[in-house]
Length: 390
Image 1 (cartoon, helix red, strand yellow):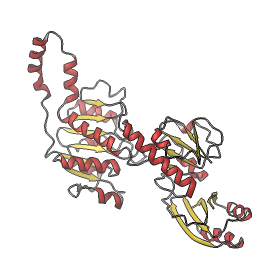
Image 2 (cartoon, rainbow, N blue to C red):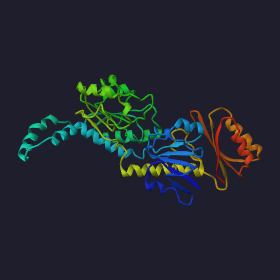
Image 3 (cartoon, rainbow, N blue to C red):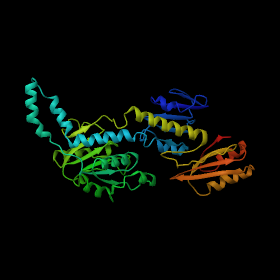
Image 4 (cartoon, rainbow, N blue to C red):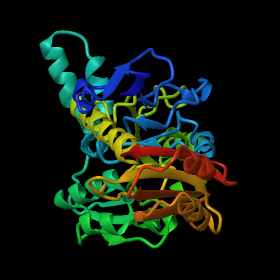
């Protein structure tokens, strides 16, 4: 029986993926084996030593102490792509909001008064201030070609836009999903200089903080628009407001209201609605529940932000050890030596590494004695050892 603690309301559809005969799920419990979380700030929590995995029902993991968990040998899972369609739709809405000046136009309508005749006359006289432009033929630059960025780029191509993409770490799998009509920019500056619209889809790390700054805003084409549905600090807000006031940028569409942006006539800021659909919440919960279950039951790792991808089919009748260790030489050799001392035959083995961590799945022909497991735990650099089957 695995104990799963939830720190936020998690979609029932996701929780239903954890069978009652093998899992206990509750918001309050002692010694949980895993934690499922959405937005709760775990940096302030005393995370129990019993926790073997953390699952974030969403993409970003800023609210989880990932580095600390890595030192403990605890994988942190997320749900990349599960909310991609929801965010894509909001980005597309942002394109139309900016190109047709819908935000200022709505403010204009809300302030109308008088009878219908007076309102009609005011509308006819005032509508010329909100003349917009159409999207076909306009250029869109997409920075970050992950699950969301790809959907945005492909949708914009279908709208008739000229689309440029930039992602130095793009995976082969994502490349296969990208429309062949999307053009490749060689740098952020190259993309900014080619685009009238720029949509940001990158995580917030040191390298992306203030990625869009005063110098890069100057590179945008006339009537430039920036769409930020990633994280607020990726855009230098002070530089953005200055560019809007100077009329060098047409509009800023984002998901992150702030005091500096509030009330600006050419800013549309939604209240962090990117993934706020029932479908996205369900998809995220289902994905992360499946990943937690697979890890706890078989040791397999999929979509972890700190562990390597490691999937090894579990052979019938075998016993599996899942071993987390520092990524240093001769770890597999030392593990194999201890298993040999216990006269244990290795039926299958998978070893993967990521940064400072390495992860090994070992399938044995027979269950290991406690002395063999203890010996492996005693190897310098081993962070965790679990028997996950058999």
